[in-house]
Length: 315
Image (cartoon, rainbow, N blue to C red):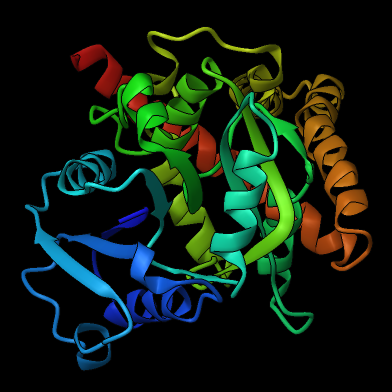
């Protein structure tokens, strides 16, 4: 096998089925492809998934205690392929994903990891458009990190990076791709695309997920250097928290002038991030929706980071 698609999975089968179907629809020789699904469901029952005769599919069942990194590493150990394609279980790849990503990976001798850009329909909800715009802030260029939704790399690169960090519940893709970055360049390409089928559609859903995603923020920085470009993601939520508390304290002590200044300082990064995102989105979503996104995003990240602080202390 030339390429193993390794898919960690838990929960809904219908999205996983669409993910596998997008692999089966690739415009390349599928005899060179295998799919390894590492699931935390007790069993998979989808007939359209199990009866897909265009692909060689194997399924590994793992306990719910395993992290997503552990699931990915299990799939890599089960594979005998030269290349690994790590996918989330809720993405639909464009038909040229394999051919385009292989070409992009081999286009530069220093390139060790590639990923395709996110795409969404023009009729997508505002939140999905926001997420897509954020994912595509920089395209067709080398980047420092890549999300784990679709990654292609050689087995030897995976081994040299030490696999995914099994101690992290979230942020494992940033940690892993940072390790891979030490071996060569990471490239984010528009030559192929994917649709994130499980993308957040409602702001309440996004708020809950950002709390969950934020819990490994502090753990993810242990044991690796932190680039300057990553510092704002850690410092801005702290800024928002401190000035929010200062605003509340000033109101309680009837220092309304100081409260006004603290409130402006609380909202300053929200507006700066919102202006940047609005420009990236090129007007596809309203500025009000972008503001709404960050007014929920930063508090959720603060809650998640504080929750994760106790995990760091307990390690």
